[in-house]
Amino acid sequence: MVLAALKFPTPDDTMEFGRVLGRALRAGDLVLLAGPLGAGKTTLTRGIADGLGVSGRVSSPTFVLARVHPAGASGVALVHVDAYRLGGDLTQLDDLDLDTDLERSAIVVEWGEGAAERLSDDYLVVRLARADDDVRTVTLEPHGTWTTRVPLPA
Image (cartoon, rainbow, N blue to C red; front, side):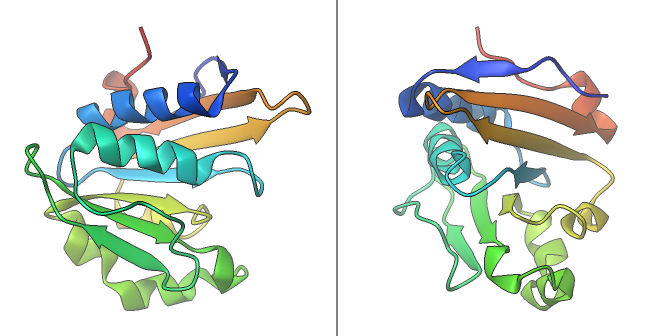
């Protein structure tokens, strides 16, 4: 199931949707972010982190593959993974032991579609696209329990 496209005219709008999504996350949640370079995946992740209330600066973990942001008031840590550097060899994701982190954290994976889904039957794919006028279009593809709990902006 694919939900209708959401339009976000500014990066701040993308961040705000991330906050909405972050407030809905709980330990064990898996979110996959898909879209080309510059589509807003890391901006959305910053919003998710803010919504979760985790600590630490959120930046693209391209060169370290994953960053763990300790839990804040929500009690849920965030593991932010960027699989771009793997260049399609997503088998290296196994070395990160994300299945272990999933028990106590929410995991957001940029560029992990095609491999990270195997971590859970319950996951949300967030597809981002950026138009020439910088408007982001976001479509949501919920799987498993996400089909009944997808947060939508007010």
